[in-house]
Length: 311
Image (tube, rainbow, N blue to C red; front, top):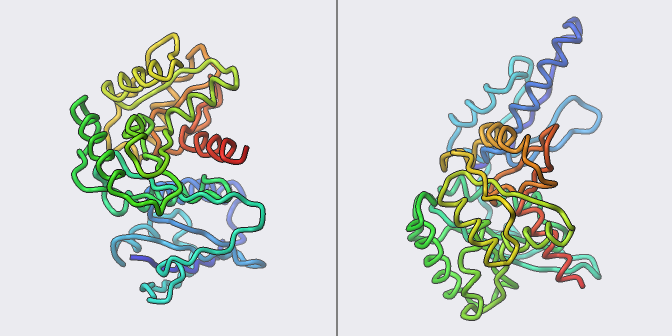
């Protein structure tokens, strides 16, 4: 359920400056956690005021209350809440897209998730694509039926691949291309049997790193994904000198930005390479203060895809 929320901050002027800096830093972190969880979807400043409008997408009013009261600045907030309902004439619902400036490339891709996820997780992934997709590129995220609950074994990975091949083959030519929402590139091997081109996040990202002349390694949350990622690199003739590093994280950690960032930062700090490919397409990567650069495979793949299409 969507809510439009207006918040105005009334910070007491007699409070110490150190307290203000501390609380506002905590507020920034809390807001980012809500965004990564898919609850906080948009945020706008109200010019000339210490106030903002925000768009929340949560289960119900109780969940919204819990989200708002979790914010460190909540005691000093004046809050207005406006529940939103769908409108039959919503341009997006009618399939009406805004005009694209002349000379700008347009491409619409269908991204299918590799595992069965909730509508809220689909919304979180959609918001992530909306944020990182270059101009002219639209990615639509969907979750087809029949997927495994996680990629926890070779059997799960094979089942995910089979479901995506079938789902993509059933699509019509309404898309400019397919982009599986997974760094393991499920269904990409079946390109010849699909109605439109299919692009692999793993292939695009690996070739971009190799093309830039960078030495790189990869990390993945579990052993089966790590070994499949190694096989994928060998298939593309881009294998690294060392195997993918295993972070030992659960499928729930995909939506836990802080937990993923902590595990990744610890794992990559001493790796002898220029860049580290984060082996999950649905995670916003951290930027550790030391060690090699951590690469978001999805963001890199989208930029590479736009560059290829524009040539």
